[in-house]
Image 1 (cartoon, rainbow, N blue to C red):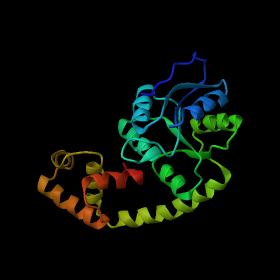
Image 2: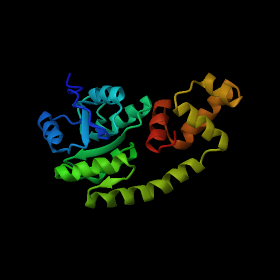
Image 3: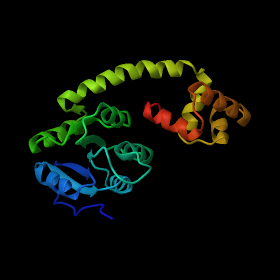
Image 4: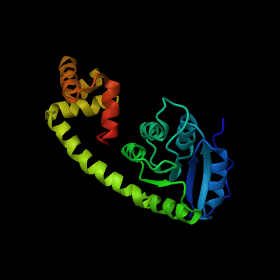
Length: 225
């Protein structure tokens, strides 16, 4: 297992980073390229390794490849979803050879704060890490348009989808999507389990979903949890 790399000497005030990429040579090169103000806490090459290392060391920033082996085939987006379930507060910067709109939009919807291609220079990636850590969104120039186009449309779509649900159905949807059982949801909202079942059925029908698992994924992708 190629998880946590040796700890580097602590530098007061330095930003901490985990590098997630399935190519060891690239990870080594990225370590070298990052400036002295960035301290690498660990590395990972698969979805499972990334979840373990990020959850353990909780870095300021994760440099995340989009296409990774392991997991259920979800790559970088799956890492983001898994870390969200763990309550990880690290910020994620996607770093990939791909500049396709589909890859960019998928990983940003999953929670990444930025997306840059691997043609970026060492100085540029160091600057990007600092900007992501401070709360900025960072994109390679031609990729920003993909995000603006996608989220301008996505916002309207999400509002339309939510408008289909009643206020009570929205409450039930959020609790069920967060992993509450029917009984826990009923207790939280002071309604019967039967009523919860009725609302869940209505939510799944209106959103054209087939299971609680799909509902959780739907809500997570739209950042409704």
